[in-house]
Length: 209
Image 1: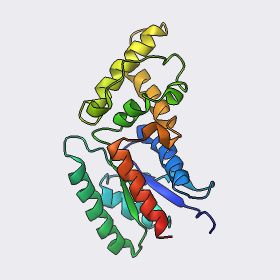
Image 2: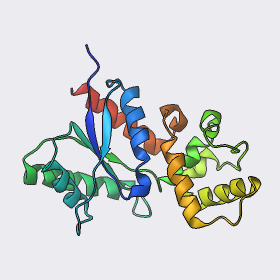
Image 3: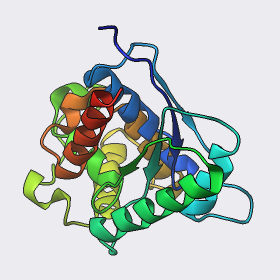
């Protein structure tokens, strides 16, 4: 059987999360999709930043095979985010008369947690010049810590070691986006519970095609 081609849309929280596209495309390839499968960024409509508003907006314009909806768990918890996405997906299916599957993308607690996880992998660290031996956050605490602040601390030390000046937030945000985009191999996130849940849902999607 030929590998299925997937055209997907990603409804993400903000432009700084565009790097999730690399993770999703790597995941689709890993579960058996065609090499040319692609994920495109779907912007929220002006004045409506709800998941339902975003889904209705994109499903009225395009017909993807699947829509990925990104929501950090934050303090609300993964279960509440999952419920939020599922309810919006059900209503959007009615509003737009479409049946495109919706797959939640819910890093716990923050997207930065996936970068912290990937930093344990030497091959991923090699994509960041000078990131030789960072103070790694233990696997067991990554999904429970303030991931963005921990990543900022790692970035500060990395920038200082490279002769950088004071670690400005704008530089951190820029590098953080690049590091997220560098997660191009699912092996970097192997064992991360929130990523494994996403991977399982993608496997389930392929079985239905």
